[in-house]
Structure formats: structure tokens, C-alpha cells
Image 1 (cartoon, helix red, strand yellow):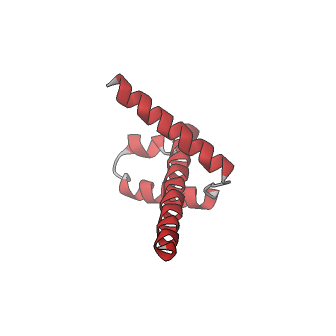
Image 2 (cartoon, one colour; image 1 turned 90 degrees about the horizontal axis):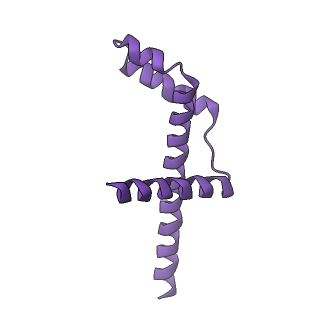
Image 3 (tube, rainbow, N blue to C red; image 1 turned 180 degrees about the vertical axis):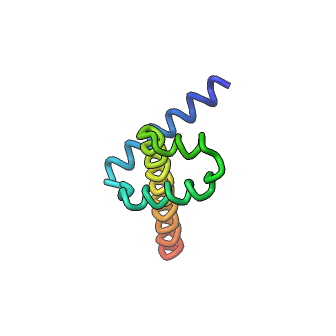
Length: 89
């Protein structure tokens, strides 16, 4: 269990570093749109709605979106490399 947690933390840190190096970010408008979407989903839960006002929750959502965008960047990069390899053959 501890090893799995360590692996996840290392992967997350590596993705965060890559995001910084590649200047991958998410605009505040996109984060706001995601928060509005979540407000709609959780509109019947006062506790969940209240948590969405917390700046830490907002930052966590933004971080997750940056990680997702970074993973998409890596997938596209890998797809391009595979296409280049096929052309070279």
C-alpha cells in the first residue's frame, strides 16, 4: 500500500513538473465552468455546494484539470512519435 502511494505521488509530481516546463495551464474561465457543472450535479447537497466555494477545492479541481491536460499532451506526443516511426519504416 505504501509503495503504491509513493508511486502515485511521484507520478503526480512528475506530471506537475512537465506541466510547468511545457507551460500547460487551465484558464480560470474553464475552472469556473467546471465548478458550475459540479454545482448543478450537487445542487441537492448543501454540504457539497458549500465545499465548492472553498479555495482549496477550487485549486484541487484546477490541479486535476492541469494533470488531465498534461496527460492528453503526452498521449498526443506519443501518437505523433508512433506516426513518425511508421513513416520512417
